[in-house]
Length: 286
Image 1 (cartoon, rainbow, N blue to C red):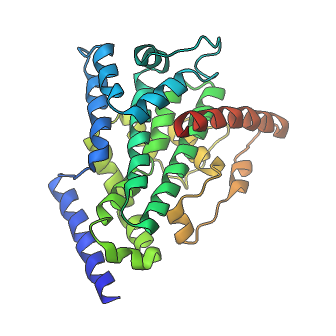
Image 2: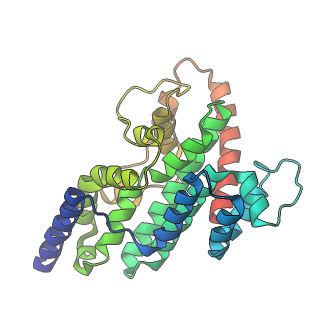
Image 3: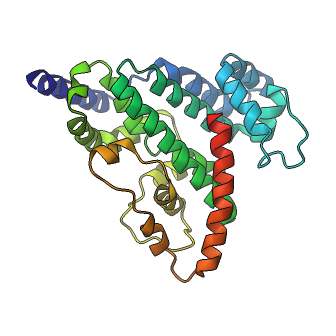
């Protein structure tokens, strides 16, 4: 227990110093994600240059092809086989999301600790679930921000991913995962904000992730932050840190947000959104 306390204190001090100095140490698996983001943000970058970078990561390349050929993005089923055509189909915003999702998946798989790896994998699946619901709700509610909803859903727990990655240097921490979950809940928000600032994410996405989840949410949700909150209620994969802290899934809260919407209309919307959510998860996880 003494070693746990010592390493936990050192871990917290390290995170505090990184936030204070504004120097975050990203895992190497995020290098490709950052490179793609910079290229996508550069108006002088060509599609072929971006495609060349994507081809260097076989897992990402396969997911780009898979997503481009989903019924969601390719309703006429003309098969797409080239990376260039696939990126043109899914768009740069979705490519950024996929690059981050692949990096987070690799982080989960590569964690040296089996226990931490299980938590990271659960967190990754929860993030994909939230992002897929957010995208589906934004599309079916005819919001003009489905890509932003997808990205916000993925980035909502980016602070927790970062803390998991940094905790790898302190093996004694896994001796008390419940206490570690408390540490993560303490640092989650400031670390998430710092990471999103480092990624230079759109203000719309940053604000959506920072929205107050206890605020009243009207149905249908209008603001992107409300869409993300509703997506967290709909997500069927639990955040492992919530489980460690004893927080239970509350699907009844989703129904409580109905407002004046007819129950039949709500069920129809949920069924359509679920179908799209399943297709998005298959594309990202396949």
